[in-house]
Length: 423
Image: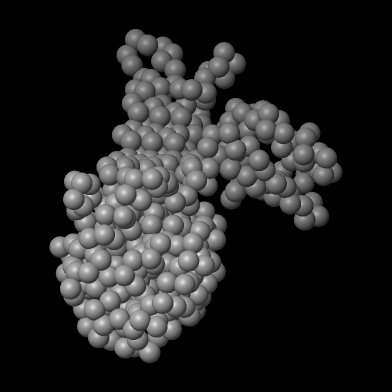
């Protein structure tokens, strides 16, 4: 079975909490705070695994989680960082965010490793909050929680040449003739249910990868038939061989077949429709001369090369392969997606944006920086509350609350904490 599309859930590790601790040692009158920091949460990585060819494993294992960081402890001991998790995928895998549809990573190179989700930071211990005027800080910082994302894994085969054409036009037979691949061959529609790859070695010593892609029908760009599965894989190729049956045995019209398939390419991707294309007139051993002449005229109209071949007798096959090898040397290898489109999810330290929602005399503050701040606070400690107020001023939250008309005695909610406002 060939699996080329699946959804999974990934989660980075939580950061460990900072410790609240004070040095207590005989003959040391004022040891001071010595709470250690929490360990960092593990990151989520994806790596290319040369032993994997499909996404089949992900049908049964849908959730992947990195390890949490450990809490800090006394004597300035930092908690252990959580182990990162490395998820192996086949080369050619695209990773997308389900929510936004944006591309997170494109694993198209051997031994490539990409960090997709950063683990939470470890919280600071109370040793960091000591000042000349606050010598006994009874508060520390909680660790950052990890992030959880649902993502799409989409496998796109990495082939130099793609065989394009309707079902049963001779693509699989051609592939088996020119490579060591052994695709299933039979005289019925959709014999090829999964892409097959083979390596072609030309006489000049060069080689290229050719892919027999599942047959396409009208409406494929809308998901009809094998539809998008076909188009996903053909998208990676640098050169298209458009195989068209000129035997007339299936009752097909070569000109109409050419038009339909190219329209599907255009509907799916303008870039794909403009890709270099060569017309391959197949089954030349039982050729219908009238149909071939019509196809030859079409090639001239479109300014495309045309080769007449027979996979059964070998007619024209060597000439076609030599030409393909020559053309590929002039076609650059390009990444499917621009670097600017790729994103990596991180827990950034400088996200100070916040929003304030008012409901009569209640004000709710939302934002990463504000919620991170409240996790540091010991609401039963006066110095800790002073630290909170100082940072509300620093983040601009106090000014924003005053602008919205907050008065003494009103309620302010941040995360799960509520407290009265006072001047």
